[in-house]
Length: 279
Image (cartoon, rainbow, N blue to C red):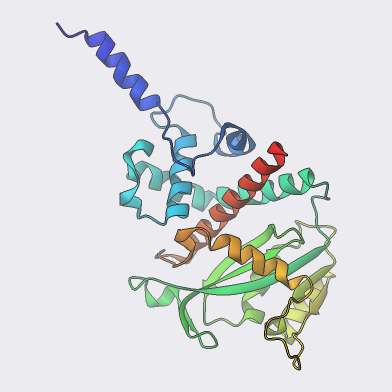
């Protein structure tokens, strides 16, 4: 005779066992963001930690939503949480919180005094609506442009996504304006030659900051040169490219692409925090 109570307990225990993937949050990493994600403590069919694990698995591996392993739970549940958190601005909130945490662990003031801005154009998939992308004439890329501002540690201060046909000096206005009430110690924004122009310079001056455009020397025997401080933001882009979901933009909506960028930054900083704890 089948012991139905034993069978029931076995199935309950099986559903409560966490997935085991390299992208999963460690216990210490989960403690950093738990209070931001799990605001209300209550019984849930699928733990929020597993939902976060599923989203991080997706950004790292670049798989489709429907291809998520069943260990995480139904993909529809994972996506519904992702969509809810995207509109609530949770990913941006966690990203900025982790940046402050990393800076504290490095012995830095939570508010940096210098920001470095740059952008990169990313190709979009063929199914993206034409109103959601543009063509970068300089790089010959049809897609979207990721605009980021980082501190001298390479950590994100702001991250925005827009169509690739918007000039850097125009696309930079939105992320720069978002810095106004977040970083009281900020004094200077360092940029490359693509950020010259009166509108951007006027906007930065209005904030009470200095815009420093660092140009590459025209006459040089070397093909590659490390430009002071500008290499930091380029390194940050190289960190992003380690996540397969970020190599090509598959998102139908620009705000979804922006959320994916914020999640990727969260993963990068959680790894940094883990290394600091080990050290």
